[in-house]
Image 1: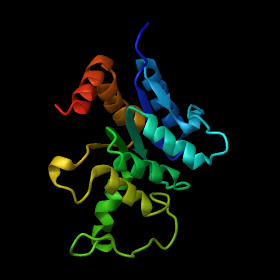
Image 2: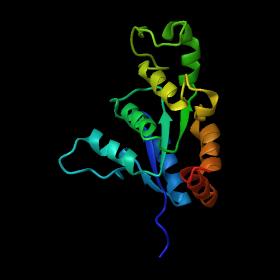
Image 3: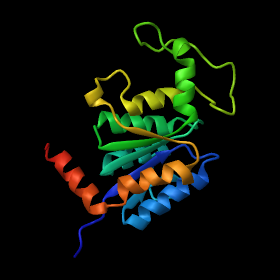
Amino acid sequence: MPEKPLKIMLSSTVYGNQNTIEAIYAGLKNYGYEVLCSHKGTIYNIPGASPEESCLAAVAECDFFFGVIFPHYGSGITHREFQQAVDLNKPRGFLAHSYVPYTRILLKDFLFDGAGNRTAFALPGKTTVLDDLRVIDMYNLATGHGQPLSKRIWTQEFHKYELDGAPFVQAQFGDVERFENDLKRLSDGK
């Protein structure tokens, strides 16, 4: 009997991003992974638990956490999933829409004080580029902002998924045997 496929959790906000999520999901499935994705209904809904509790349980269950940071914040469950993945030190990787790091750089002097701490700066309202500054907080959490370089996580930028996001997903997950071996080496501490 073949081994069970690796479980990859695909975590992202959904509204307005359905096509990109579905493309990533389909690609991961085609490579042979089991994909845990709330948008696709593949996260176990724990009887009596809230959607957030079920999503956080999926983070604990997955072998690899793959977060996609869009410029829209959503309900906040995705942010809590990111935090859970960091807290559990899950092997993880991220894609970020180019608006997010661009806006982060643009607003850096307003968002952070001289010591690098987050200020109380707030957007006056939602914009088409970014609807909530907590998206930047998610990006900082994903990348390991403030950590030594050796502790930071690669977060690949994309603008149009088909052009500059899909090649990253293919390069990262397309060679399933290599990816499985790298995860095994990581879990063995090598």
